[in-house]
Structures are given as structure tokens and as C-alpha cells.
Length: 143
Image (cartoon, helix red, strand yellow):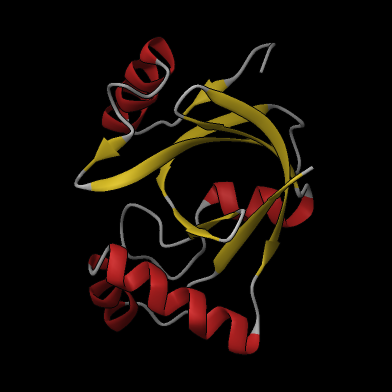
């Protein structure tokens, strides 16, 4: 991962990303008791690269994310809106850096992966109760 990247405007997330990158995830991979990865997306209008740390789960050799946002809102988080337009993303899991293609899970796959992620991070159930939107579940497949 190279070039200029804009970290999350949330200071705690930006600090988390900084620690994660500086230590190849030794500090930051398990944050909040849940595994985290660093996701870099390309802005849908700006073309700039944006970076966030996010909870993840695994499904075989794929990584699974939940686009809940850090606060419950009626809109999807920016990182999700960006990858919906530009699905090629950069990922770092611990010291492993790679490119992936993102897609939104649908139907039975979404239900299965939602169950996986809510078991891993039950906070998503509370988010689901408090938002009018269907929270997207994202699958990352290494390219």
C-alpha cells in the first residue's frame, strides 16, 4: 500500500490504524475483543484513498465486514459507499497486505454471514434494531 491516504476523521479510529500499521497488527488486530483489519478504499467522487480499521470475520478464504458505521445512522458509512462504486480495495490483516474485490452479500448468503458476524460482535444486533436501513454485509475476495 503506497501513496497518500486519508485516515478516518474519527481520531480514535485514526490512532487505531496508526498503531496497527506501525506494528503489523500486533497492536490493534484484536481491538474490542474482535479481530480487526485495515481497509483502504478509493473515493467515489474524489478518487482519493481512504483508510479505516474494521471488525472482520472469515468465511473460508474470504473476509467479511459489516457496514454499520461507528454510529447508528440512516445512511451507510462512507467506506461502504466508496467500495460500492470502486470495489477494488487494499486490505491489511496483521502483516499480510493484499488487494481484494469487495461485493455486498445478498439473500441467503447475507443471512448466513450476518449470523456469523453478530455472533462475533453482538453489538451489530443493537445497531440493527436502531437503524431504518438494512446493514450491508461485505465480502472481500483476494485478487
